[in-house]
Image 1 (cartoon, helix red, strand yellow):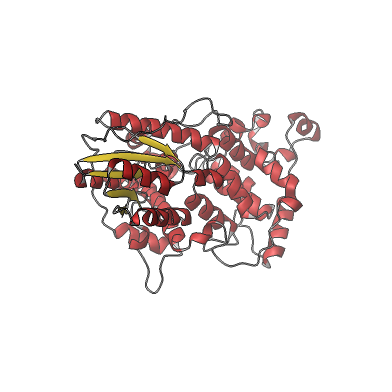
Image 2 (cartoon, helix red, strand yellow):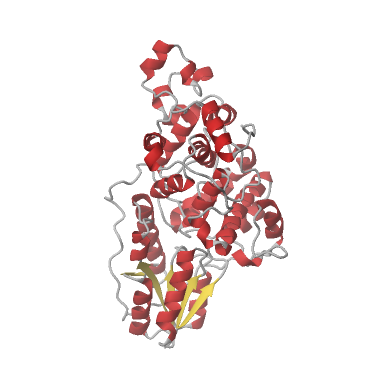
Length: 462
């Protein structure tokens, strides 16, 4: 009787799961294993929103496996120790897992190989599980990765994706392996009240709804903040409850301008993965070397606190920050505005903003969070690193009636449309009655500081 172990990491699903399929093909019995890694907690990634979502993903994965005759084995401790222990308990000859791109994922794989090397257990990693296209599969001439999105996306679009793998019909798990109880799904402190439900079942239901009634309008509606016309599938992609390969293929099969725009966003996700795979230190260091002298907590403590609380005095920024606090999620246009305001109007270190986003966002991950922050801050892959997003101009363009602002900033609910993005223009008596703060800094003053710090005199980009 042969046995293999499948180590689930950021791939919490049974549909289109190459490691699980390979293990089932190679062995008579399989141990589906998830390890609650203390290293994740030590790095500060085990925050309430993601912990709650993860618990639901694990419960759903366990239910899916039980419906096929199996179960999910959960253990706690260092990954290499727990995997080695499980392999010894069941006599496994192979361990299968998805290939990662972060420095932490690479170190985890090395520790696994080292722990299992003398035990006769082979570690097999599988590509195109966490991304649609393997990070190293598309490279330019004379470089190890693409640093600009457009040429990357042209090449990425030409890659032939593998066929999605159906969910297995049966999973046989050896009785000898014991696990601990699944982490609780409810009763956690600090969880955003509007958090989406986790798990592959919820993700597949949302995907079906999106393909049926949302994707066709995505091309024109993706920046409509009030319309909320995005898929909201990013948390399920982050935890691997949905397969990026399946999403790309199903969107392409659907066709149309909306599907093309959606696939482009999935291409951005893969783009960031290939950047970080080549430059793992970009998670904490500037991707492009700059001589920025960012303001930090010791200098801008009060401004940073106001930004975190959604009390900057700029309605679009505050609405976005309050949405994130309530839902553990933020519209992408809001993310751009909030990040631009912190880094280029307040001139605060992008790492401070990235950390706060990671503390709240259910889809917050090192790859997309850090590299999107660097893109906005001008230290990353943006080909126009000096662009500044004006929250007033952006508000009038993408929330012209102020519906998004009024939803999240109730102090401005009754303000006339012409003042909703500039409440400081109201008569003084009316402004004082709102209970809404004055702007932290004038946009012109912030822009002047940014120009001076960067040594440029660029005009704001709107």
